[in-house]
Image (cartoon, rainbow, N blue to C red; front, side, top):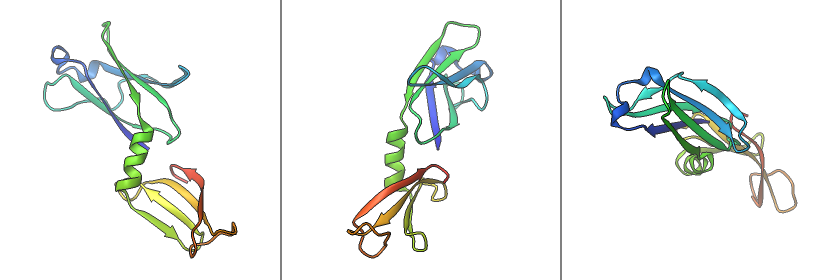
Length: 142
């Protein structure tokens, strides 16, 4: 799932996007993305606000740690996949695939699949006619 993360490092840190680095850590402190400057950009012109678009699993839970190279300036923020998932469920398209008897949800780009569910009737048979239950098949690109 594409996730935009930003950090306001302050006006004094404006115009130095080449010196802004980030790393991503899971909730147990394990490094998921090593310290890098890849794809970091400044939001606006000389704002000191930096961003990066990450591609993470919909199951990811953790934080991003921002660092200004060769300084002791840091910022961190929780990565909120669950809130983004809820937004996508409400704003993106969904469809029922008749042949598989599955419901598929997409991000708000209406192309990127974020969740797929098997659909069942009250007897527990796969169905699209009398929907009684859904069971998660997978998340992300299935």
